[in-house]
Length: 371
Image (tube, rainbow, N blue to C red; front, side, top):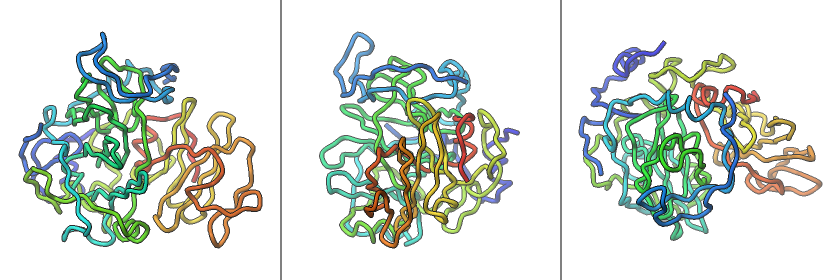
């Protein structure tokens, strides 16, 4: 049953007064700048103005990601999140420091990115108020994004454009728009459902959901996003609860918006590590993966293997078409007699990210689930 944001927060006991919000409420301020739909070839690089639009386009992938619904159905299920366009302001001029902000505890979640030797951490307690950071890492323009309602942190190449928060949701998920073509991009799908780029998929990169202690131990040279965002926000106050320890919306069975489709195979807020390709989708229960360290599944007839990174408390997913045996060893994982780290098996790695189960199952009801 769908309930209002205020009803949900009262039910789960989050004692914060909200202004309107798309994926999250803030302090009330609104300042701020089922079948696959088909396959095709994207642009591959950012382009200049075309006859389709008047602005630059974000880079799109060479092939389109699998969808479990036709695009018309997805567009029909767009709902207002309660704020206008840019009512939740993206961070367009982020600042970073070499040390953690005072509010960032060791076990608080951060979203980590490494690129060409540069490491950055984006604290969840800051992004819950902004959802998008238009950044540059190792000279490459990127967007690091987070939707608190679906528990998803994802990275996208942005080329010559920036992304903003549309104020709309699909399946509870942040719907971004690009400021070049004004196309709408549900974050989890990474595929435009409205606008000149409808049907195209964005170019993505890995964002790791972990804790500040784990990330800074693995990458001591990392910098960390600061609260100097240009906006006045109640940083440190999460209107949906908290992750350290988990409570409120993040642990409740309730959702703010009706999922596209319900699925009782797991707790709605259980965390899965999901991957999707051109042909299908697959999800692994994160807690089980961290405990067992190796899990296997399939997309269509192709075997996949997931392995745990115990240092960062995350996992990686690989296509394993020859069903090679991957075994746990003291120093990592052994394949064909050679030991490798979790993030460097000699297999084709498939981009994967954390998500709440209700959101993954809503978007990908045909997805296999390995627990």
